[in-house]
Image 1 (cartoon, one colour):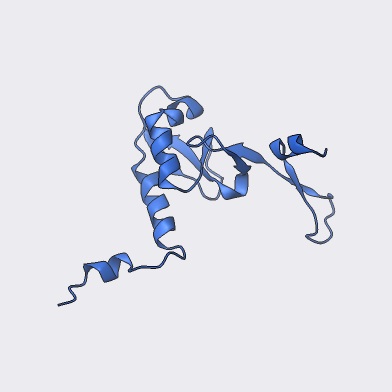
Image 2 (cartoon, rainbow, N blue to C red):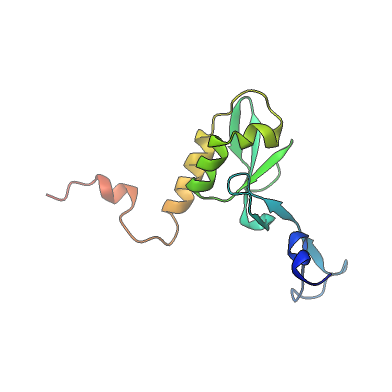
Length: 125
C-alpha cells in the first residue's frame, strides 16, 4: 500500500537482515492524550490495576491497554478528558501517579541539560 493512507496502518520494517517469516509489521497506535497516531514502540502502554494506572513499558501486562506519549502534556490532556477511563473501559476514576512519575523520570534522565534532582538539593553556599 502506498500513498498518504499507508501511514495510518502498520509499517513494514525492512533492512534488518534476513528474517525467516519475512518483513515484520510494526503496529500503529493512537495516543490517548493528543490523539496523534504513532508507532507503538514510540508510545508508553498503560494498564489499569485496582484503580491505578500502571505503566507497562515491556507491553506484557494482561488486560486492555491505553497508549500515551511519554510527555506530561499528553498525560495532562488525557486526564482532563477522562480518556484513560474510556480507553480502558473502567467506570471509576484512575490514579495516574505512577505514570506521571515514570514520565518525569524519563524526561529527567534524558539528554536535557541542567542539574539532576540530587544536584538541586545541595546547598551551594
